[in-house]
Length: 589
Image 1 (cartoon, rainbow, N blue to C red):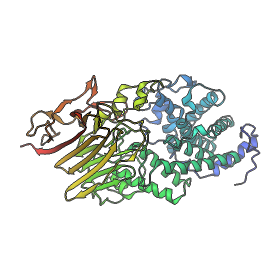
Image 2 (image 1 turned 90 degrees about the vertical axis):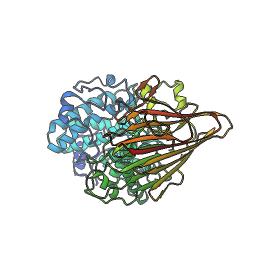
Image 3 (image 1 turned 90 degrees about the horizontal axis):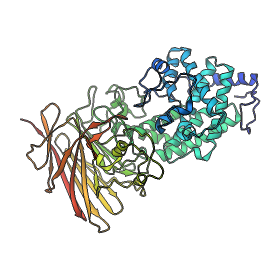
Image 4 (image 1 turned 180 degrees about the vertical axis):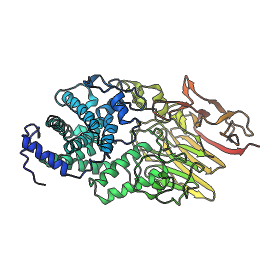
């Protein structure tokens, strides 16, 4: 579309000298545009629990953080300064999501103006003055804020934004354009690179009548192509070891495709595979499997949009849309995931009775990677059986000189460190040390996985430098699970090896067992679970809710904890050990 906008594309401040006529021309061009879609609120988070009325009246609450009063005037520098994650959400303007969606739904302009007022206030502080707060222009906050800035400009142009507010937002666009142009703003090695790429693309497309903005959008599209190839592997798996980030990035890329920002068929094919994989990440209780940095996210019956996968849509809709998956074993060899769901649901209704197992054998990089090589979780008899530590949240970062950073930890909260640790997962450790997350990432460690008559066999191998771990899981749905761990020192050094298991806290522990190990009674009292270590090793306790040391916990939602049964089986001073442990169900007579 040709315009009469008198702007210099090479200027550092494209909008600074806009005349009134130019301002109105730009406003009309924005109103007439339709791509990307900024009219329906799709770029804003729909999973915020508070209503728009509560946010605007009582303040904004992010997760487990305190509610934050956002009444004007705001001392922006003092807000959320003690927590990096909280600050990133604040300076990414996440607090606007519900008010914007409520404005779109009802047309009540007070909600739009509430957001505009705070955007102008923020822009006056940070686009006209410098700050020592690094999180303000941090790449994650920059990219997410740009999406919301684009939405405000579009909705404001269509709904009577004042010239003063419009100029203030355009001044903010200038500053954002300068930040996006910095090489340091774009990191293709983590999902933050995606948010930078999509933020600058959408903001650039919103104002592409301005030559300098069109160039910003084109750079953003190039960055998006880089990100989809680095974030999603060829089998569709996200490379950051977290089902929640897989879900979040998959939907975000899908939105970019829907808005014509990605048109490459190879890339869209990869997104279809990502959507297929998402279905395997849904547990029978409807929640996302909590591997890596994944809190509890309800996937069935929630307000998630449809995916590109009919099989995943079938699970998410409770069988009302899409089609049933005929396969009970899902193997993703490049990403390093294997899943069992048996039987696969075929119709409508509850899906909680299936046996489910998720096995992770991958180390693609440090992003969201816990010390959890060859970890797995198990769901059976309508119940979580083997669980893991969860995410807990991020919080303040460790000092840069902290020795814990050498172990792969970045966050200061001891409980956050615990949920990342090896004992919080169902895997093997050597010398009571966490898996080394600073070593060279080997990629996928998944070996041959197969389905036989009534039996699923999953295998994986992980090289830990001085020692190697080979794991085989044999699952008979509803009957038993046998885990064989073959650990061997490759450097001839004798080591102490520990096998860690975390049993769901809903099971009642009892020492009575027909085998050599402990047993638990499942909720309802009809079934027991027994652990039989067949190599004569004794189970070292069944610890629950220990504070010193931290053992026997998990975090289902950020900032929360609940008790689980933490078990350890050990073999001391050996170069080679094979652990074989069998969990079996028995009906209580």
